[in-house]
Length: 186
Image 1 (cartoon, rainbow, N blue to C red):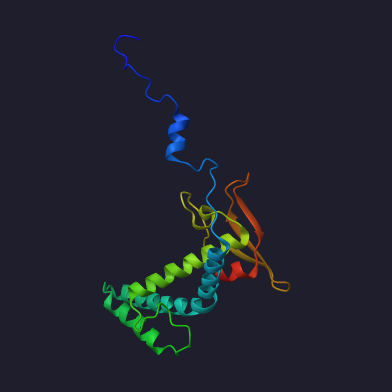
Image 2 (cartoon, helix red, strand yellow; image 1 turned 90 degrees about the horizontal axis):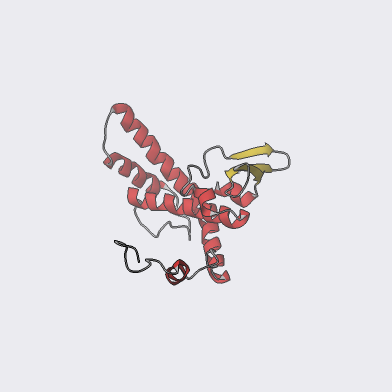
């Protein structure tokens, strides 16, 4: 033992500590059950196909009202809330398509609807094309799906391409064929 040294080795077997703290040694995420995957995909499809037009319509109304307020130099959220409430109440009732089961659409409900729609789009893109989460949403990387990442190559044969970052590739960005579910989601 050297003079002034600690009388023990601080980490005798670092692998034992790692295995105790992180038992998933394969480095892979645990798979979910098929039933759960079907429920997630079914709900995501319902949001993208049924609720997307309503959510986009309400978000456009909110954006229009925000633009009017900004042009007048007014910073007031109440008129935006009012515009969203009026647009939601003016929609014709569609049986079985109530969003979040709310009678009145508020800005916080609209925000939750937008987040849910974005999550549904992410789930469908991830499942359909087998992409990683950070490739789609840009987690811990400066990219993800972006405005303009979807390109129509040929209208005659419905050929769409998705330009996206692929984590484990030499080129990083890859353009590949995109199916109709992902096209609608994006």
